[in-house]
Image 1 (cartoon, helix red, strand yellow):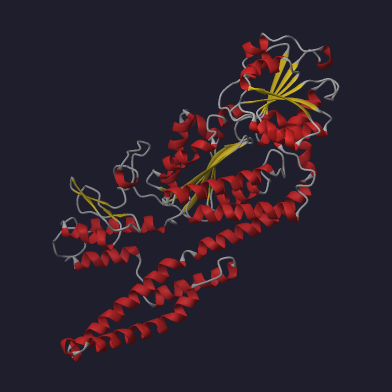
Image 2 (tube, rainbow, N blue to C red; image 1 turned 120 degrees about the vertical axis):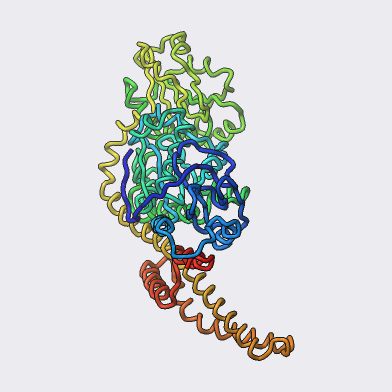
Length: 564
């Protein structure tokens, strides 16, 4: 597996046990992990906490781990005696655990992870084992987000790639969980998959998706179909989130795919990379033309299996190359009728799936572009068919652009047949890449601009915890001072109207004092310079108002518990 490091630093913390969110399942892929969020282990007793977790930390004076998610959880643990009741100075063990907490907290909470394989890294035999059909997309995303360290996930699956994008609470553990899922999905040990996988983090992962959407990573550079597929992933994710409302396709991936769609549109509208660009379907049509003895479809009988988007593009490009008679075999007729309406100049013959073998036996060139996930035509089927005419060299040619494949590759062992798949299209598109080199360089500059835009938005999220801490601290001070004033005045002697006036006065003073600092923390997320200024202000305010880190908060809680 290839790993490209990014600007984020990574450290690991280990404990015992591993289970998904809520502790419902156990994923054996891990030998070390944090306890489930929202769970406190006290010796052998498990205490469920109701508060929504903000951070995952572990602190204990026993050999059993205690997962502490926030102040309420710590207090719950204190009430159970988990943190001890003795007095005296903090033990060295506590200090060590607090330092571990700090190291874990230093890792950026939301690492963006991209793992997958493409036509550049894996043969079709491997890609088809990980192909994810649209009807099981939701199920696969749910399986991924059920892992304890994966907050968001989505899958981009096409004939040339299967890429998984995730937002992980922990980089290392998130990657391990994704590897575990990939192994289960493919039925292959991860050791066999790793040589074909790419692994990218944060900036590299973001840049990769932007390049994919712009057609810069496609087998056919500049092809437009991939942008439609990226849009489809965003649609599926939005529908998934609308249905389940579980955060599986949350704000990070939602914003990332919106940025990718914008990048794809800009690349095609502001550069010449798409001028005369070919798709996988047009490359397949061109390859078929090259493989025919006459380099022409004039004397060839053509059959297409499937009537979806790929087939529609095939018809378009075959007709442009002089092929006006086409047989289409599909499971149902409605899509066939749509083809007839869209291409009235083409002479179609439509048949349903039961007549597949009959149609193939009567054809010289067969394209497979169906959504079937199994082999439709085997070597034995073709061996029993009559030999093609000498006008096509006595060879029946199959062009399989489906993933998973629909044509048995061993057909090529026969003297009277040849089978080609999407990996064989490289022969056609190599010249395309060199012709688009200049446009690709321009596109890369646009990708960098879009990358900076997304990173600026992501960085702007870092000020949110500081805003909450500052307001919380101000509110604590306001309440404390208000209570002192009420005690001095004699709270029981004041009317409700007078108490309300004092309450409103204190709130008004705090809000006016906080207005300037709060404004300094807000920024235009699309402007990197504005984000940078806000981050500088954030660090200054944290020092100025002594806004504690998680470690300091825990020290305070331990002190209040009696460990002075």
